[in-house]
Image (cartoon, rainbow, N blue to C red; front, side, top):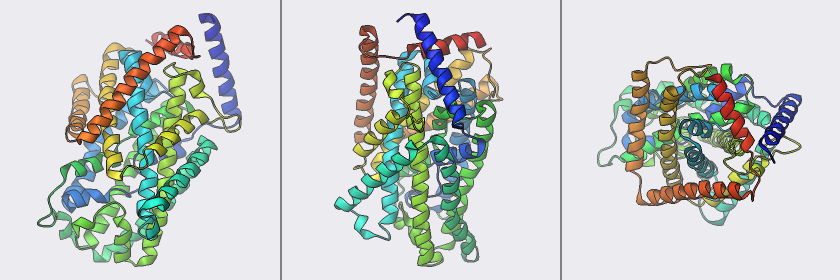
Length: 471
């Protein structure tokens, strides 16, 4: 097939998809997008307990107060600029491709996709960790694996029904999952002793800096994941900056307020501050009724977290298919719901394959791969400013070049630290998955050369031509 025919076919396919999208009202509005970002990043204070167990109340509070400024805000600003400049479903894959070429775009896609789908496995595990506080049968063995399997399959099916459904479901889940913590905070006020907030931890309990920083990082990253949904968002150039800013404030408050309430209202037993401990704290503060409510909130939060992360992964695969990084088949949409069912299926299968790992192993592996991707993302952001200075940017980070360098270098230093302190197992996993990403790129390149598999290369060329015209 010639280039002109490919371009024409691509244009007709894109036009047909746009008409179908408009007809079925699939575009995401501002409020659902805010809650999807919230669930991409946080989903509530569930999972932050380990920070107190690792370093004590004071450092945990300072961590969730300061870390957003040195990590979350820079990542959100980079996402706001690049997602509005290149509003396609490929997200960060497109950014790396534009900056450094197809090899780095493909490698970025491998790192971010694998970190995302491995992260998917953490949510059912986290949910079961909360449920076992009430139902000990889920603590280990076959019942635990069965619960993880069925919850994963059910949540993936919900995602298949449509992004708009997922978006408004996220709004309801966000409000419902935070209600028990609002009650916990209000009931804690009469019991709060402010001196408990300045505790550096119990004597004899050593600080676990690796766990501390991994917990902060895991709870406050993935701001850029929402960029893979840019093609599904209503007026992304206007909507993204507002949504990211609103979700940022919402996320910080959802972490800090319950943490201040729980640490201030209860005596410190540092070794008990592990994932799921908020449920026990609720029982201490108000009784078992609130403990059960927190457990229900945890389940609702996990549903929102899983749906947001799976949407990001599935639409990333769709975007990668659109620009020719993976075969066109990977971008096939459902005839009934217009969702990328192949992307959903691939993401679900990988998540199930790694669900046997412990929660700590999962977040360590996720953080390592995500760090590799974020270093490339910051480099892409800076290089695109130099490579395409006149490119039209609907939102532009309002800083001079020196300010942009500082904004990217500070979180990059933290990314390097997270990678340095990783375990040998994480290094091995990271190296193997990186090797897989490199082999995948050259395999796809060979398949294109031999024309064994159909690729949507026209979409890639059209995107490049559009960028040149904007310049």
